[in-house]
Amino acid sequence: MGKRNSLRGNLLSEPLASMLWLALTLIVLIILIKLSLWQYDRGFEKEQRSIRIEQLNQSSPLTLNEVVQLSQAKQFIGKESVNDLPVTVDGDFSGDYLFLLDNQVEERSLGYRVLQVVETSTHAVLVNLGWIPGSINRNILPEVTPLHGQYKFTGHVRVVEQGIMLMDQDFSQPSWPLRVQQIELTKFSALISPLVDKPLLPFVIYVDKNESIGYKKNWHPIVMPAAKHFGYSFQWAALAIAWLVLMVSLRIKTRRQRNINPHKLSSI
Image (cartoon, rainbow, N blue to C red; front, side, top):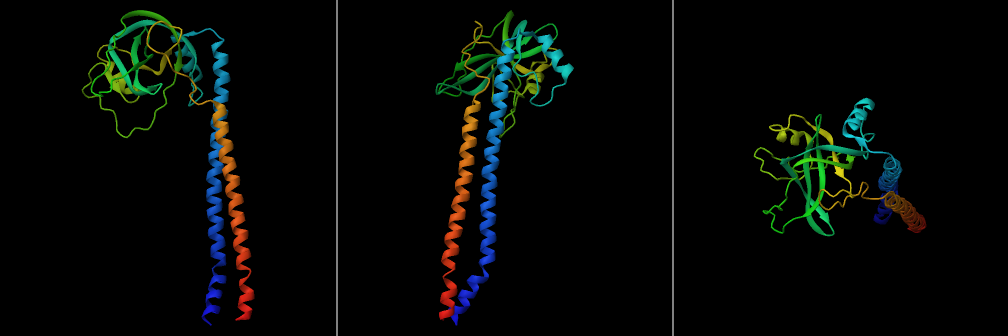
């Protein structure tokens, strides 16, 4: 009698087991498919951006005023912006304001990006001059000689993407050069306001590699190429298929084992 009740309990739990199996299978499957689609979308975006950069590089650089006017005229929103536009800058470097962007790696060496403010007759913009190595001692900042006077150079516009920060940057008592963990143009504008009466433009100029000014220019507009995103998309899709095959196989095997129970029940 006890065996019969136990078997009846197993049979009654079959719908619940099926629901749990279905829920687990679908949840994991949906997650894997979404990851695959997300990587595919990222790859498509990178592919389109690469085509755009190639087309832009074949055109003549715009002046800084033209970039600003274009941005205001088209009212760019989100990713559709002045990003990657070639530009010619003619202005004065402010040696009073030098920013060192921390945690920048070059060939496994930790260092900084050197950023300095350039002021024209109408605008002020932050310029990325390149990478310099840092010291093992985090309390020692690298010795950087700021640029002074008027320079004319070419570069590319880069719209700053804000990353996740655990703590807000505190610039209440700045000392120059100023080490920063992230570029925050609004806060930087407030810092330079005593001597620069113009707010910083909402982008950074990356100096071209063929320019003599600055330091090691090791940047790439696209860090991860589209092909790698497509590869990751394929891997997530393959995992989704493998997961579905595995769960269906386990389900079939479990059902076959449970189909033996009715014969045992009739013999009790």
